[in-house]
Length: 131
Image 1 (cartoon, rainbow, N blue to C red):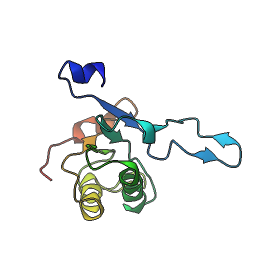
Image 2 (spheres, rainbow, N blue to C red):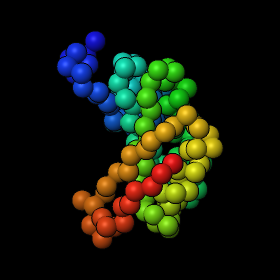
Image 3 (cartoon, helix red, strand yellow):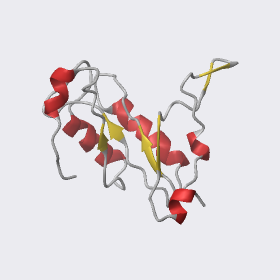
């Protein structure tokens, strides 16, 4: 049991879904995080920031996490993007959420990564929605 749990505080872990893989025959991803070994009692927040021009790569990242998660694990994907339009080969937030709903209907919440420190002109684009 984690100290946070003993104190009645829900804890979570943020990680890259593809950051737990060997690269090539002997290398490791510099973002290496053995998230598949994280306690199932943690909320899992996979940073699902795939950029491929459609929602497929984002949905695949989240599906990958669900292959490892137990039925008790609360998975809350973190998404990046803008409401109402695609930017830089990244689908709009609502398209990403619709894709996740299709492939992982058990998701009941998502996080939105605020990348205003990288692109301050997009900071005011964040809004709230109901899934």
